[in-house]
Amino acid sequence: MGLVLSIDFLCVTLLLIVALTKGFERALPMVAFLLMLFPYESQIRMPGFFDLTTQRIIIMELVVLYFALGRTAKNVGTPEKLPLRYLIVLLIAWKLLSSANSVVPDVSIKATLSQVFDFAVPYYIFAKAISKSETVEKILLAFFSAVFVLSIFGAFEAYTGWSIMAQFPVAPHRFAGMADALSDRGIRVQATFATPIMFGTALALAIPIGLYLLSVAKTAGRKLFLWAAILLMFLDIYKTSSRGPWLAIILSVAVMFVFGRGPVRRSLAVIVLLSVTVLVVDPGVRDTIGNIYGATLDPDTPQGESYQWRYMLYGVAQRELSKDLGRSLWGYGPESFYFLGLTAQFRVEGGEHTVKVESCDSEVVQLLMDTGCIGFLIMVALLAKSASCSFRNSRKMTSPASTLFLVLFVNILVFSFMMTNVVIFWGQQSYMFWILIALTMTYPALVLAGPQGKAHASLAPQPASALAF
Image (cartoon, rainbow, N blue to C red; front, side, top):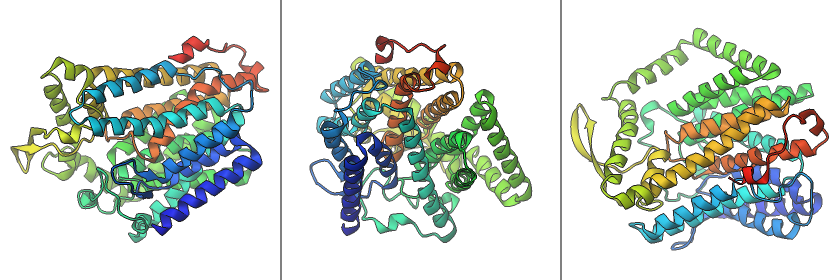
């Protein structure tokens, strides 16, 4: 507990000093950096209430500082109306409706309020408080730097077996105590994340950001740091032994190579060349990847069972939601999945058995079960709107803004893909994702309001009614 209290005090003090001495907007990159660093275990337990994690303490201070300092300045680049406001309000309202009809109303209402505070509040503040395009780049650098720090811990974990998580008190959550279940592939690094796959997701989000920062870096020292950090992150994503993040980084590299320009393509070519070289020179890496791929296709292995389990979950969701029209529309309530006592026919140890469904390795399935088809479609609309905004601007704007928008598009794509691999709307990577959504929706106005606005004159600002959705 002493470590957690020290961390909380340090975070509160740092943010207060930066906000008071440099201004509220200059404190936002610090917020982004700190939100990524600490695990869910860094918390003050409050039985019967909300767990007071370090991230929530940071957000509480952020809210106070925003109303005290962040609303005083009126800047050209700051949107008057919140982008995506209607979809976000609709999503929250639908979650509350699902909670009212939940099989566990108290759990669902608590989960909904937690998500509003954890993700909607930071989205609102970042979307409303950023007034300069330079702040966006500093926030991206802060995220990248935080993941780099965690990658150092991850590399140390991979080669020594020592984990920074051992220093934090044990805190109950759905992935707690899963070390044995995750040991089928040896040491799988997770740094301060709940599971290796969540750490891998953060790495898959950070690497494209690093490629953008590399494309705009001016000094040799900055380029050297970025290359070293990117290569370390590739090592860590390999050491997570998580198939989802591996596929996600391949997807992001492919999309950025097809739609990227100049410096980004050259950096990607170097990375591909290095990857191929490692596969040719080091048979151990090649054999490890081949063995995991082969085991994934074998339903009698732990990896194969894990892979088949995700497909089985869709069948369970379809079966349960089809039992009642109301449940198919609004679901069973947020966080209700683990209270339903579900069973399914599943192949275990070479035969079909009736097994309890005690884990949900898919955010897509959990959204469907928790909020029904309507809630799921609202989330799809929100992601599609954000992805459309980022991709369209990546094609219309000139560099470096076009590259930044391409990276934001890739990150939305990666996160959406990872929703099919794990329950992902909690933890550090979710804070990162919702802030990136805020940057996606506000950055066009920031570019046009800045000194380079004339270079993007062909891209007229979107009307407020369009951004609202």
